[in-house]
Length: 91
Image (cartoon, rainbow, N blue to C red; front, side, top):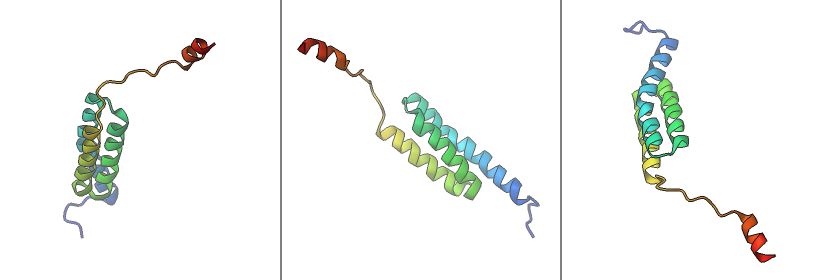
């Protein structure tokens, strides 16, 4: 018998909550570094990992996504030139 008295659903929900808290780290990092896609994926991945294996999986998933965000941080994005300008110049 389980000494904590928690049902399986309660354990999964607690793990997802822990994953949500841990997943805020890649989300905030992604927002600050302008990489919201990886930030949201890190949040969701940490929640799923937390629901599955608790901190054992939530922390490594968050760490991987923080690394991905910091490795490919966008500095400045220049807009692409308008292709219609080249067509009108050649005519």
